[in-house]
Figure 1 (cartoon, rainbow, N blue to C red):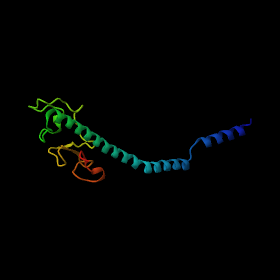
Figure 2: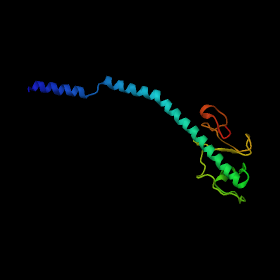
Figure 3: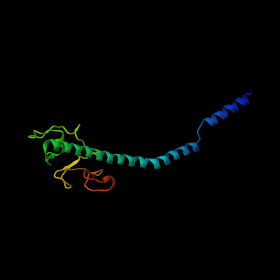
Figure 4: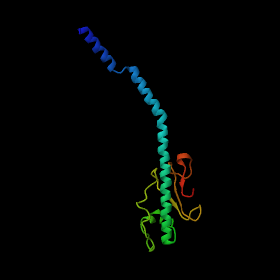
Length: 149
């Protein structure tokens, strides 16, 4: 083989092995479009997951409150709050808790759950999370997650 053919073959391989600027720009543009379209949808799913988690936690609290009432005959007072589900209140001999497996943390947005007894929506206590903004009321992600709905 002549040296001219070898040089052409080497030159042709090295030209094909690299990535041109145009190809790189096309790839970056495709990735940016994908992120612009899919990114907001994925973020919205995370927000929906927080709402579902808050609803599930409120449901668990309601079940624990029901067990508490079965044992003691009453719901915890406003003053005792949800802590009565984990720690026996003074003078409550019929308490057979703890009624929650673990200490009650904050809602998925980092705010404490709100307990109100007597509640405004029937005979049972009201348990709620104020949503992403931590304030009563609101719409969409800021909407309250409540036990009576």
